[in-house]
Length: 160
Image (cartoon, rainbow, N blue to C red; front, top):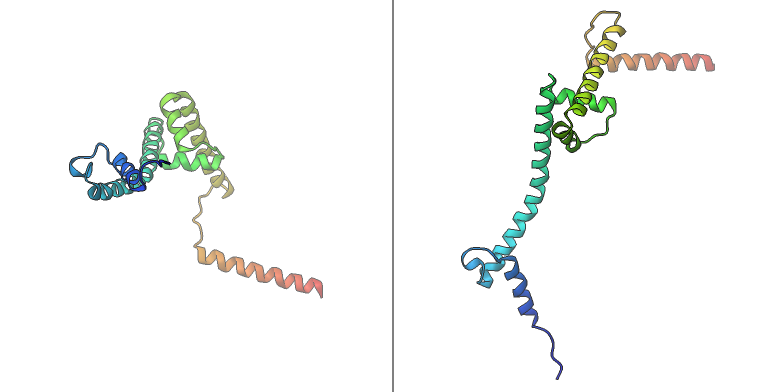
């Protein structure tokens, strides 16, 4: 006589009870309640995996912020200047540098400060030593349209 393994139902129940092992009350050993408890537990696990990523990113940002503020700079300005410099370090690595390699992190902050100073001086020098207000977006668009029409007229006149 050929013997097969346990019935499908037994295997299915064993899987559910393996998931609910360690639960309290009847959620551990009453199958109909254990099924619901296991399903809910898996939903919580799914959400928690995403929350963990969010929490870690927030932790990295806090660590970078504390490290940057030690050197008299804000987190936002630091990240902005890092992007402008083309530094490809992510927040995880920056936070590790802030904790374990403070001298390296300080040099990065100095780089960001230098980039900020250069950017401000470039704007100041391009205006001939004057700080000029930017024109509103609508005026800039209208001006660019007028220039485009003038270029078009000169192209047509030279072609004829």
